[in-house]
Image 1 (cartoon, one colour):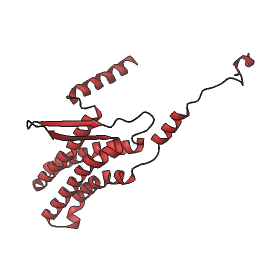
Image 2 (cartoon, rainbow, N blue to C red):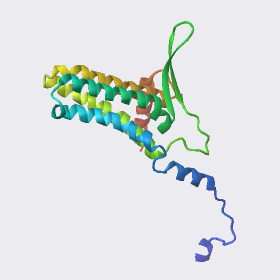
Image 3 (cartoon, rainbow, N blue to C red):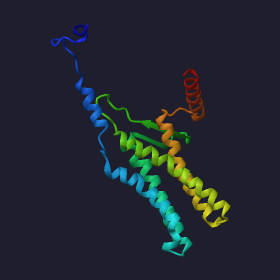
Image 4 (cartoon, rainbow, N blue to C red):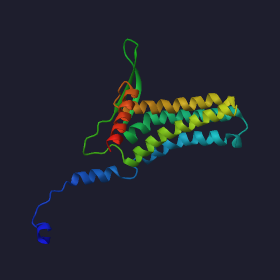
Length: 198
């Protein structure tokens, strides 16, 4: 019986080396280190400055302007640079000849033999994009309950800028579908069905 289980040494096995190269390229550490750095730098700097601004300056206006500039730099860099480089997504508003505003959501079409971004870059991009609006939302409630209402406008600006990028990139990822709620409900129903079936 043991002889029956052994494989014939002359048997040919086909190997697809292209998939291994693509997988190695995809699992590479970071292909765009500068874009990855700036994807996190401005947003983390805005959060750190918000938390420790009173230690650096007693001027509310200086703190407000500094944080707002960091949030603006973050919005611009994520929307115009890091989204394209790290995950191959971009979005913008376009006005046609009739004066109507149209939102355009694009995902880069990548040939199957070339990876658009590495898994590490995509993970950094999405984690930074999701976690920071959650932090600014926490700041909103802490500002509201501690009655530091002068900071409320800045926190609302932080939430607005961060969630605008998140919303735009979710639309890009979904292929520009009109209703995120429909996609979300379909995803949740699929998850529930899978859990029930196991």
